[in-house]
Image (cartoon, rainbow, N blue to C red):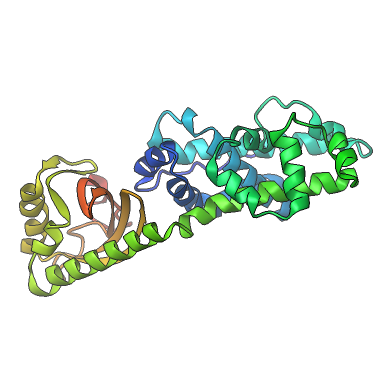
Length: 327
């Protein structure tokens, strides 16, 4: 019976920008990317493996492998497809291992070289990451010792670790499994448990956009929203022209929407260092309900809470929208 192929993952708005930031060693950006795909990865791993626990383990392994191999991603906008291919390899490896596993020699299988990188091998590649060391420092001592023997020493075998620590082989395997789960979860936690400075940044952007949208919607005043962009901002609308300078953003986007009766509603803001991602919905005028797509995502690169580069992505138009074929 052929193994089913995973459902292709369509790129989400902002993937390319977040992938570029993640490639610059920003774990928060990578955490945001992975969290956005977690539900789909879980569904697809469950479809391939048929066991919820195996599926959860496969997703964790996929996250760790993606983290260590991010430099291999050549097309940031294709992050979803790249992630799906990693997970497919992980699931196939698990299916093969289950068929080949001798009941009395699981250790030999675990120590055997694999044709594709495993999550264990990828943990070793992450040894120099500060966040990895910090995560290890928070582990209970038995788990930390086991991890350091396996990944950061001379790569002791499972049997050697069992002899050194005085525990059964199954305990060694269990501890290393716990470690991979902790590191995968820690990576995702970075998306929500950022530094206080990052949380403050998200809060300040949320407040700023909330007030600017209020002025725009209630009083027809685009000024507060325009001042969130630097005077020399470069702004691009996906599939549209590049705008240069705050004046063009104001006249061609903001004032144009005002004249057409379009308003905005803030959905949420996430921030990481000099990067902010703004999610918002369009409120179209009653007489032209399809004037704008339903929503937009704006990726802002900023200094001092003024965006010097902005990219806007529009949500897909729904079925029944007369402008659907034209974007």
